[in-house]
Length: 372
Image (cartoon, rainbow, N blue to C red):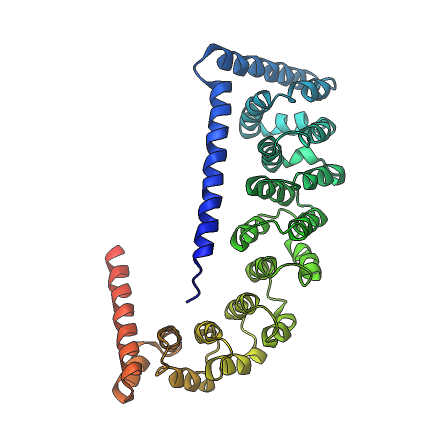
């Protein structure tokens, strides 16, 4: 299979970054909420401020208009902002109606804070973006200006900051904002692992079909890694790209990882016109990995022709081709068919992989029965 030690190094570095941010957040929260008197005092003061605002809402049905200006001043302090976000989450969870009223006039204050935090260190920008992600109402119904400010955070940022920015934009559900953010990441050659980017896109709160359409329009201009992310995202949400993807799959000039991602798409969404291409990848591959993946994908294309191609792949000198071909044959024909192959096959490699597959499937069946 495809292995690259660089992937593990990069993922390891990302995990270290995440741990560092967790430590930072813990320290800040501890300072704000800890057992020392100043931290406890800060929490109590903010709780009193919230209680006053709830009293105003209960009495008048509207939020205090002057409170936004107060927040613009006080939340310049990141420790205040951390405590504020914790208490705001409590309000959101326990009193959703009051929370909605409270947030109605706050986007102006948060937009001003966004501008202020743009001049702060990357860790503070990451925190503000995370705040928007958790409280998308901060963007209001016209979030264009806040979106532009958030995208500016990506410049000279850590991976955690740009991840939080993208997460915030997805939480807001702003299609063009997400597209523009990825454009910046691409133009500045900033790292974001394709799985990480895909996972963030899948959290998009707006119309994901529209997002997919806009991303695909720009996709060809972006890096191969980003293209893979977009295809993975589309694979999770839409069956409408079967015809669009086929010419790209056939194009040998396209990066291998992009073609692999498209192959997996056809495993989820069977498309009869791709069948000859899958056969070709197995019988005359220009890349061994295409044959490996195609042998697995063919499980979704049961037919006599498919069975014949997979049977011919069983004696392959490459273990993963044999394995995936046997797995697909099992999914198509079941245990009885695999036993028939074992009784009639003369090639040693083919017999061994079929025996192995039968043992694996029997083991899984026994394990499943024990769990019932």
